[in-house]
Image (cartoon, rainbow, N blue to C red; front, side, top):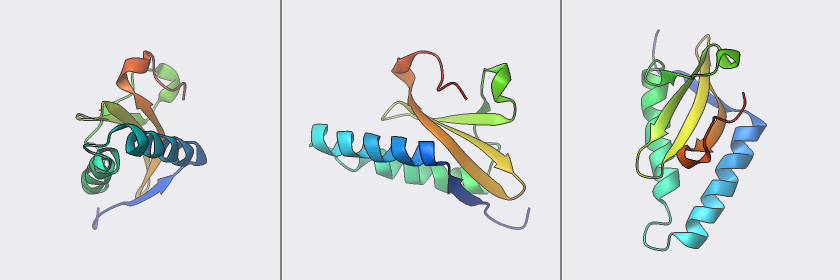
Length: 101
């Protein structure tokens, strides 16, 4: 590895992030930027250390990892391909089973 990996987002992940951010800004007046800030910090770490997340539990999601955003309680699901971190989904920890990847 020669440096940080590039991060790309599947359309699904982009839609989920936009929806979560919009909800967070409307409903969390004391910390409207918390979700985006936590997501950005996590991505900054994952592009440097792609193995940071734990392997997803589903056998169908082979090669997928997840990392918890501890303050907002969202899991970010991603996989590493060559020198790219591909963000697949963002799923709240309280929603039970994962996003069905």
